[in-house]
Image (cartoon, rainbow, N blue to C red; front, top):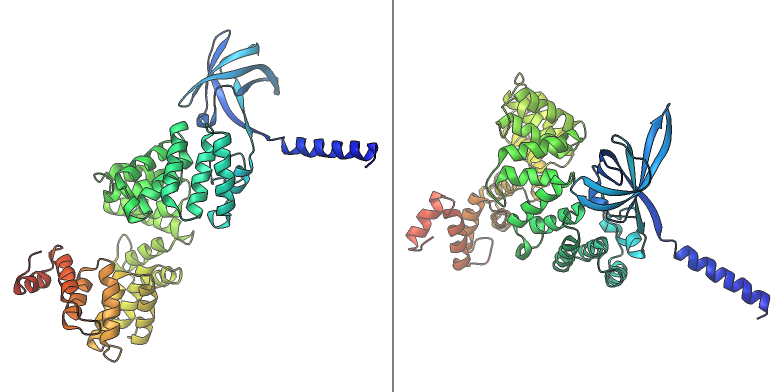
Length: 450
């Protein structure tokens, strides 16, 4: 290789190295100067949780309709939304706009596994289904070793673990991220999600509610509907309808359809707000216009029963059908019963069974119980103990009380399922503990406690 080629190759390598080593991406947070001294200022900024000591600040003022730079500074301390900065040049006064530049380097871990809506992210979020889990785990593990105090790398590693269906390792990595950055909204939310919805042995509703609350307080929108649900239902603590309504309202006003429907239910039932059926219907309608099936079902129920509107069962059926076609399992059950019994339309058992089976495919307990009873009684079908046991068994697993009793009866007799008296007794007990009298009477007859 001649000298010229060697030099060209060296230039190329240096250029490539420089491109690879240009990991700076400017991210800015804006705030306003609320206190000013000759050498130090206080800035209030909504996005302060992403700011760190050492970040640079540019102060801007308006003069005769023109935007002018007034000074430069550097962040020295962050407390909540309050940022302390020292002035390095220029003259800064109260009311000025402060533009804080967060200089963050971009690592391959960022491009592989950035979380959605992450204030610490320097790259676009990656959908979990698009994440190359094994590659991301390797790269992000290396990143946490290279930069052990960068919280986002620990969070991104945790996200990669989630994609690889390794929630235990994800919890540990999210906890490491939060040890570095306690106010890390995306990490708090994702960690809470594992504690709420993860494998049974990892579920901890108290911890989940605490973490969702911390994320919601940091204005992380995705945490608010789940926190509202937990407060409403008393999961992870006592029921708190006022808190539930508060979080549903904030998210509802951000156009989240789940929260709009849930906030409507708060108004309908007087949970945490004064009862107001008109407001309930307004929120149901808004969520329905976004295609949210549960809200459509609530409108169907309102027209069917005359809740806040003139009773109109046919209009109710229209909304039930919209909800059912959008996949709402409860609406599918309601339509199934309407057709089976001919309540609004002419009786059509075949159509009723169709909707019940669609609902049962989603493990809706009432549909499973109804189909089990129909197969047991030979209603709409030829009597079939095997299918009766199949549906009752699934309903029993879903916690449906009468299904637990009926499945126990079939287990005890060996009808449609292998005889198992011990398992039958277990299901009798589950139903009996929910005050199901026939189950209690059967256990008494068998001289068994519950």
